Image (cartoon, rainbow, N blue to C red):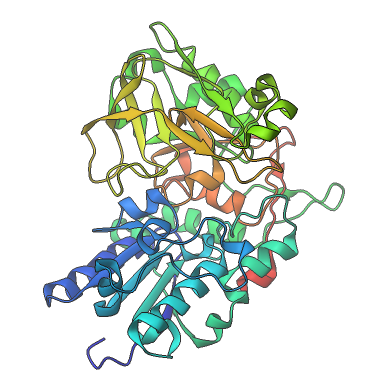
Length: 439
């Protein structure tokens, strides 16, 4: 940065190695010199952990249909304040980079070369990506293993210009000098690197860590003990969750735990429609109501006062971004009043309106007018990436189906004794690891 030569770097950082602290120190050092350092992340939740962080999509105005364009660009005009910001930036940091599609980085590369009038990769700016390839790769709807690997940043022309840096010391182990934490850290790396012992009879992998739980009832009781009493404690609520690989299991768990909270339920029905009026007659409202695309709120949203919810869209980044967890304070007819329980704005009260959400993941395009939230006692493993929690339950009755899911699920906690795992295969499960992504 000091000699303006730029360069593209990747910081490989397993959980607990101090990646977020290091990034924030880098950002502070650059800004201390009155220079511009931009911090973005692939997920809204990861962005809240960075000083001045925002999601990559909102910062770079990346097109929603990224993978449909051959050579996409960021939706930024040249003579705007944002274009000047990108031109003058000395450092750009992109956290959880392994989650993003390679086309997003290529769109930014083309845009920066144009704005900065520099044909070097990323326009000659110092560009730092951070993440862990043991974690989940870009989500490709109905995609195959090959599709996920092709979408990975390692498959981009940019990767050949990347200088790799690695954090290896687990700071939790180093600071506390805890031998049990060291063992847990090594077990997690075995999961992430695909080195678990495999049963030759059923090809399942033996789980090396966590407390095995016999039933779903026991799992909910271990993660949320005496929930009817403790749910009013926001700190207690935000530091625990149950994770599952698939959304249908998550939705059932959320309704099960909601029923344990005292007080009346409030139901909100969405208004669903097809933007193209000519197609409206082909798709009855009842059919639209039954649709549940990924990242969409349900047709019937049920909440209670005190229930934890998660935001599904960026409303006011970085304060209210996709992945922010809140607690319902008051459920009103046309607005939800809620308290933020994660990130730097923790404790702040906000109002969440109904907004129109348009789906592009289905053969038809339809619009749902609904509060952009869902219950968050439980969440999908992919949604939990980037979070650090105190207590985690892992529901593996449906096994993990994609690269890195088991690693992400197990590594959300720093202490093995607070990890509870439900599996109906006697402490064994699927552990899917794409070796190509780790090379």
